[in-house]
Image (tube, rainbow, N blue to C red; front, side, top):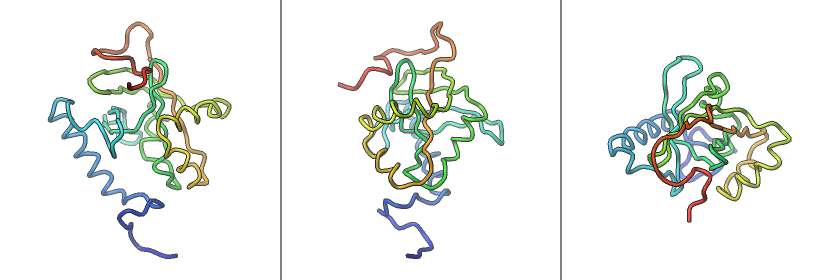
Length: 171
């Protein structure tokens, strides 16, 4: 089967990179424009806004990402919808693991680390319960999809804002 472009609605192919970049920038801009009150979801699912440092540029970048609440932080799954390659942000977190995560007005200063292979056996069921398509993504690709465990950098009060804990499931 051959193809030169990405067809709309084709679940086996990610959208072209230029489209992802444009949509990401628009999503972040609209979220900021509304003071964080709107654009907290993507495809009907909650997202967090992760501010990271670019691996090549050294500039601060903010991207909306699916996340899984976990302990005092979050899990970030570098699935890219089961694409054959890791998302661009994967390299950013490997090179510069200190990140800031915003979710519905709550900000957390976290450090990202790749889950060890033995940890992933316990993390995948948690991720799959929170977002069932992750199981499909793993079947779709031959690569070992990375999971970042993002934990507080300093246990002395790293998060600001009010609201329920990131570890609390939505009711």
